[in-house]
Length: 228
Image: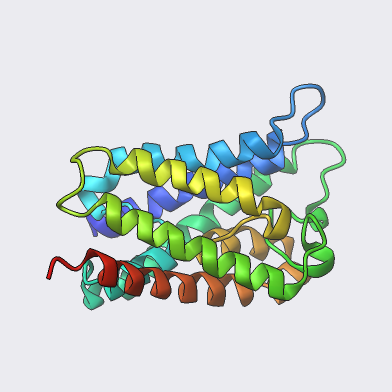
């Protein structure tokens, strides 16, 4: 239960910090943090939680990461479902807290997206479903390669959270214009539930693509990282 609770709290922090920066601060008058600030916020949530709970639960914070680590031989199948449930519940709880905070401002309109992920008309840059699918698969694939490589016993000890946090920052810098960046089904679900409508209709892609990408990343690292 301690591991599952750590995943709940860690994913809560990721969604509140990352999506919260997008909803509350990205376009704030005069001091908006913009795309660069939101990208850094997501990276910082993972970096800080990796140091805080990495030694407790491994700090997955992401169903795709848990599945990728399982396929990469780093995580037991018996813990997979409880981890995913804890992550999704943590994301939804963070979405609820963010909704309460955001709705306290005049003119708040959850239908504008609430940091949800989307494609087509709901992509920040108007990118197609195919572009969104490819982006999410490739970005998640390389995210898993970084995670598996940085946590390999042959890698420099103690630096994995930095590499992983910076990787997530880079992923957001590249892909926010395309999908608003998911690479994490829990993160997508946590805000889509409150945005409703199109966000829920398009949510399937942000489960399928990250999981496929994570599987590809795990297979790629098993090939290049095999010591034989």
